[in-house]
Length: 536
Image (spheres, helix red, strand yellow):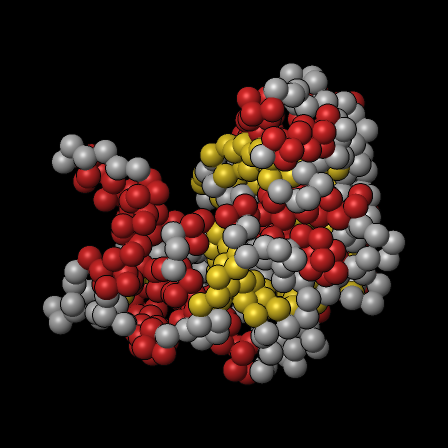
């Protein structure tokens, strides 16, 4: 034990550490790892998006405050546990929610509030671009936001000097380099696998499409430069070091790897960047990604085509809604407990309530729920309207209530994944899952295995999440052997001794989930009526 502590201290003082900071939808997390990829310390900052003039956004003050707070908490944990003040870090990487729209002028001023992935206001633009490119452009992609702004004739457009993602913005702020990792870039604009950059023919198509507008920029001029995992995409500037570390202890000059999206860090955190592997990331939204062996036969609006951090094509099913409604109901149960004079630990609350789902009827007892806090692209709903429904014949009890809310968290995802597995016959050797839901053993895995009808593994590192995955990408940049691929680096140096638990689908659960999905599909008419008519 003492030897381990000594090695960790040597890694910290010698700058042999890697830092990953990820901006999730509800939490910003900083994770510092040693040269054996073990977590040394972490810090976090809770935040929430908010509606401003009908747009889901986060403000710049919250972004910077969250960055600094997460770093500061991590730094203080190092000081408490090891008595060392961090002055050097071996490598750093930033990641964040993919997609969205951040547009800046030549002075660095944000021209309109940050439009996050959660907005579903770009339907016309996404449809037109999909038809133009014959390539699926989802509503949340940056290019859809840009084109919708053009269709809306927004006043800020002539002033644009660059557009980027949240991760790209943080990277630019701290390095001065307008860079983006290829995985994050693939959620801005289509990528050409052969060139490992933006698809040139589609870039030209877009420029031709908007030529009559006479903007003083072309698309390529305002997009960030694409980098591949393992490349250096800048270094921490003196100003960047002061922004990141308010105590001014951190020295500038740290190499920074390409900024990535949360999809890419999820792939890394679950060791699923090889072809025929897949992963599921569960949070406010949920997405499943399968690394493809070949192109899909046609365009599907439910399937995004993105890439791994090293540029391999990925079929991605992204549902805007997952855990928000479930968390809201659990919050209600917490209030009840407190009203009864019973304080309850959050982890205990989740453990008890989620485990009730294992006692439920296989199909959830005929109950139905839609946890749509926001619009849902897969099921074609533009606005959110959480809804819980039961009939007099439903078997209404706590176990079925919890199972139903777990089922519905993966309802839209199930519809999208059916296209890959059934219509495209995509082969999947393994699926790995990560996210807060899997901190409660067994339950989340069983539900996801039923939804996917495939074995689902959770690794002992799954709780570390995307920030840890980003730290791994930063480590790969400085610690890889010559010509060592990301896949080999993960297999041999990161995950070789990592334990995992695999659960195979219970066919009773699978049939129960299928019965629920049939109900879910039919009930979408009711959900649409709620969106259209219930102005709550």
